[in-house]
Amino acid sequence: MNRELGKMRSVELILSGRVQGVGFRYFTKQLAAQYHINGWVRNKDDGRVEIAAEGTNHQINQFIQAIGRGNFLAKIRDMDIHDFEPGHYTSFDIRATV
Image (cartoon, rainbow, N blue to C red; front, side, top):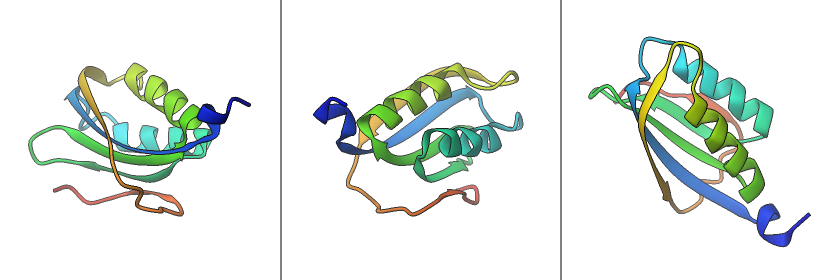
């Protein structure tokens, strides 16, 4: 495997569009399990969804692509992606709305 693809990466994703009330947090948790991603997802009170995700570059890239496709009810209008300091998460959780 390419050394860069195996390097660890932590990202924050902010998604807008039709992402609340459509099972998107549960969809995200399933994708996190599929791609071996740790972190969390939560709804924001402004209608957006926020995700913190950690994994290898390869895992994160696959996860971001899958998140961008959404589930069958969601419609992603915009996705902001920012690298951030690792949170050293050991699981993937659904958090309360903020």
